[in-house]
Length: 191
Image (cartoon, rainbow, N blue to C red; front, side):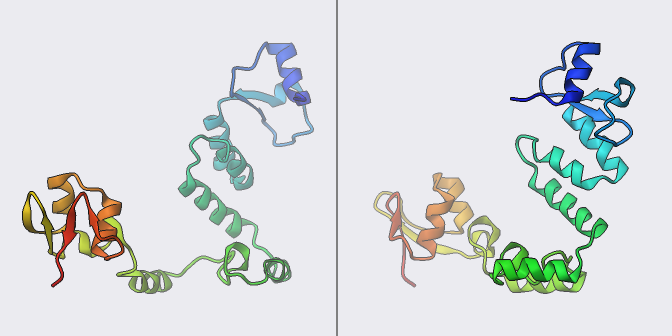
């Protein structure tokens, strides 16, 4: 792997760079490799410097190297980038044409835009009942009747069944949706 010139300059003058550390250009000019313009920093320090300066593109590039990747942080940075460097309508049209309006990524009509509070509320209302698993209301509200060869008949919510008998969330979802006949011999009684 080819070492960047500024890393060689730092190492020749100051010694080895600790593993994982970055070399930051203090004045923001990556072609200015004078020793007084170079600073050895941890990835978090490097991210913080660029974030505080409002250089969200560089902050995002640094954050993408974090393990594990913090998707919420990347999303926040992308929103800041979009608001700091707005795309022209011509650029958006070119991107949309390339994506052939598939409603994913840049093909989405909301690409590069933020939802209003009103649209967020509308989306939340439309999503009610579309979730499965613990995010759906059926987990702690709906009482189901289950039968088991050893335990007999049990009337309980899905959370109660999971906690009492150690049943799998995924399998209970499938049994309650009737896409699976049973789970660990527990069957849903037809009512």
